[in-house]
Image (cartoon, rainbow, N blue to C red; front, side, top):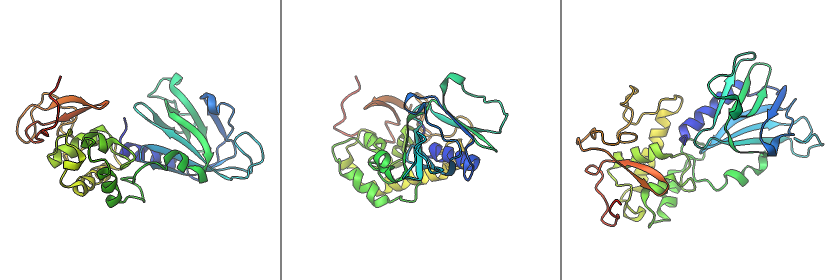
Length: 278
């Protein structure tokens, strides 16, 4: 699943391509929006909220269905999940990189064409009602609402939950995915199975997560080690059976909740209450 920095980068690609532009033609290929027509609408901005993409538009005095509109500001919402992507192309440029049957929406403007592939949870709603979709999220690690104290408080509200699962819960803090979860826990020397209530420094963990995402903002190669060379960008994530960069112990991989987890059993001592691997 894309991490918060990937979604942030995607939002900026769309913003550079479309912000201020008038949509000349739209093509929705999802049932719930199949009859929607955004021609003559203007793109105000593209933003991210955790792992959600929000394309904000102003209507020319009519609703998406063509009726007179009382709301003039609307938001096209999408979620990338595991495999979604937005691409921006120049007019006339070949749309490459993804099969055509995965296209869910195409937005044409005079200077660019934005194509959404395999997008999820797509909806169009008044911008004033965005909280219906993203209001449950915790503080956004890359957003203007970032509040480390609130993020740490939300994590601490579930002391029995494992810290590995709590970091992925977007209601606590929005933007951490499986990669950053594994890397943050390694760097803090905490086992993924440690109950939140047994973690000694939640504020420090939250601050590190934000620093890692912010450091990778603006580039597509994600690194927690400081190196951008292939095979050197992570400490534990994706490195099952490879030697730990600190102690040489083989990195382990196991399921935690519904996600796989990578960790070093020496640098991240296992909590006494953790069940033995099956």
